[in-house]
Amino acid sequence: MKDRLKKIIDYYNITPNNFSQKIGVSEGTIRKVLSHNTTLRSDTLDKISQNFTDISIDWLVSGRGEMLRKPDNTTNENTLTATTNDNLQSLIDMLNRTLIEKDKQIDRLLTIIEKFK
Image (cartoon, rainbow, N blue to C red):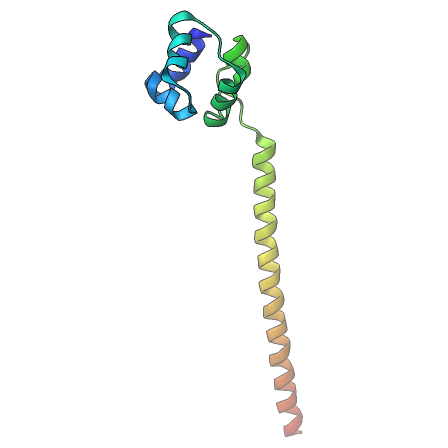
């Protein structure tokens, strides 16, 4: 775990102290892993996961896979779809208001035309 933790710290180009501050644990906790190759407790792993969301905790613990998690395209696609739907709904609402206004104008013009007959 020591080498993997060091790799994360190097990847972000921060000091072990900055890393410990970012995740909210004592610098000693991180230094123990780096100097004695101890393991991190689950609550510390959780804090790393919350603050470094692109890091694979499975990789940090076991060394399996890649250090960086693959982006979750499903979430991005869902966000994009929701945004697109909201934009389309706004456009539909605006067009409906425009049509209603045009209908009112046509009615007023028809009334004027009827007066001239």
